[in-house]
Length: 392
Ligand code: PMP
Image (cartoon, rainbow, N blue to C red; front, side, top):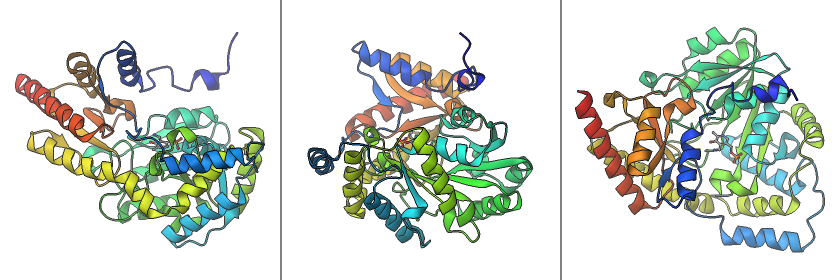
C-alpha cells in the first residue's frame, strides 16, 4: 500500500545520518568493545532522588491522564526558570509541556507553518531537523553557516533565504558544533526575523552546557518575544533523556493553539514524569552544574589533547560535543568515521550527518568515562596523523 509522500519523505530518500550509530550499536550487540562517541546520551543515569520523586508521585496516584498543557506546578516552575534566566516576564500561560524537545520541535513547526510553507534551518544541524520539518508538510530549506565563520550564520545569508519563508529554526548552544551564537549573530537573526515576519524557533536544549560566557535566548531581544517559540528539555540538563520531558515557551495565543495540538497528538505527558521533572528543576542550578560538570571537564581536556596531538578542533565553548576538522586526511567525515570504527572500534559521527557545512569534520560526543575517552582520543590522534602523513 502506498504511504503518504510526507512519511516516505522524512529522510529525503537518502541516509538519515544515523548509519554510523546503527553500525556501532550492531557491533556492540555482537559483543565488540566499541567506544561509542556518537549520540548525546550521558554516561550517568537519572539521579536517584529524581527517580524517588517519580516513584512517590506514581504511588501517590498520579498515573491517570495528566493535565494536557502540563501540570500547573511544572508550568509555573518552567516559567519561573525562564523568567529568571532571561528577564522576560513569563507565566504558565506561556508554557506547554511536551514529551521531549523533539516533540516540541515538531509541534512548533506545525504551529508556525502550513503544508508547503518554507521553514529555514541552519546547516550544520541536529540530524532530525530536516525530517522534522518535512514531517509537518513544510519545506525544509537549509542556510549554511560555514566553518570559516566559526559556524555562525551570516545575516546576509539569512536575509537572502528569508523572502517567502515562515519560520527559522536556530540552535544555540549548537549541536553538532558546540558553538554559542554571538550577540551580533543573534541581532542579525532578530533583524531578519522581524523584516521577513518569521517565527523564530529557538532550540535551547543545551542551555546548561555553556563552558564560558552566558546563555542568551533570542526571546529576550527587543521585539522578539511575540515571534519566538523556545524549545526546552530536561534530557541534557538533568540526564533525563528517557523521561521524555520538555516544553515550548511562547506567546499566550500560540501556546493556546499548541495545547490544542497536544489534545490531538500526545494527549499530554505522564503526571509522574512531570512531577519528577518539577522536582528536578526545583533543585536549582546546583544539580544542573553537577550534571554538566563531566562535560565541562572533558570538553577542556579533549580540546587540549586533540590540539596538542595536531588535530584541528572547531573552537567551541559549549555542549557535550567537539568537532574535529579531519580535512587534512583527505577523507570525508563519513569515510574517516567508517574507517576509525572498522579498524579501532571507535565510533564518532561524520560531519556529513549534520548537513553539508560540516563536511570533512567528525563530531566527538564526550560521553564516556574520562580514562576511556583519553585512550580513544589518543588512538584517534595517531590514526589522524597517519592518514594525514599518507595524504601529504
Ligand atoms: N535538539 C537538539 C539540538 C538535540 O541535540 C536533541 C537531542 N539530542 C534534541 C533537540 C531532542 O532532545 P529531547 O527530545 O531528548 O529533548
